[in-house]
Image 1 (cartoon, rainbow, N blue to C red):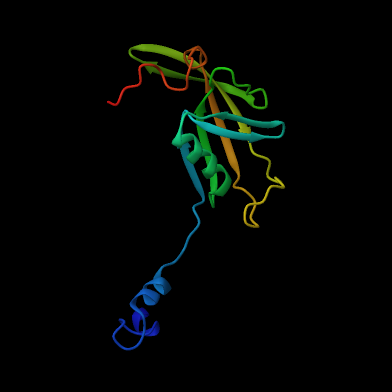
Image 2: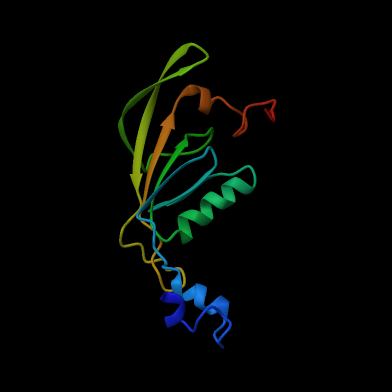
Length: 149
């Protein structure tokens, strides 16, 4: 019935492509979680970036153009200042049989951010930054040597 309402199956004058487009309902995601070592965090006093390549650029673009709310989880990197965030507690992680206690910091992007992208405000973003000396002692974002396993 939807095909008939849209001009048929394409054989009776209606375009099959336009008929399919009429049937597709567009929805906006409510919340997306993503985790990455690379990040771009815009805050009241500036921006904190940890970028090694394409993934960092993708993370930055997501934080500007994503149509829904985001929760971003990232690691604190060497030489970066995360003092704009608030301490929220610790998590335990087991790495190679060793238990690590990591501090967790929280930051929410300002809801009334005046920056607009194509007439729309950027998404609401909640950041969780995980901090541990193993992250801060690195010289680069990714440990060396990088592996492709």
